Image (cartoon, rainbow, N blue to C red; front, top):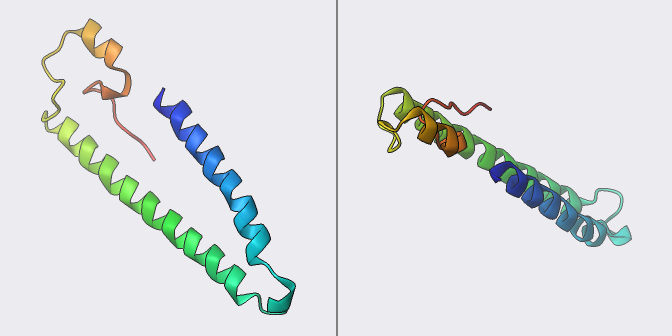
Length: 94
């Protein structure tokens, strides 16, 4: 479920880039296209920041699970199976 929602967000935001790119590259900005390149670099920086933040969040969650601090510890194996990625034995990877 989470993966499908993540994929939908990725496709949705990727589709939003089309009108932004269309209207940011203008003939009167030639030959340097400073506005278009600035927007592209800004979005790349935002993406890099989000990915780095996500890395730290999953590292923190994996550390909690390794130290037994997850709220789902102490559940039966059947209950753990139903938890999916909330299973305390599951580790996130990047």
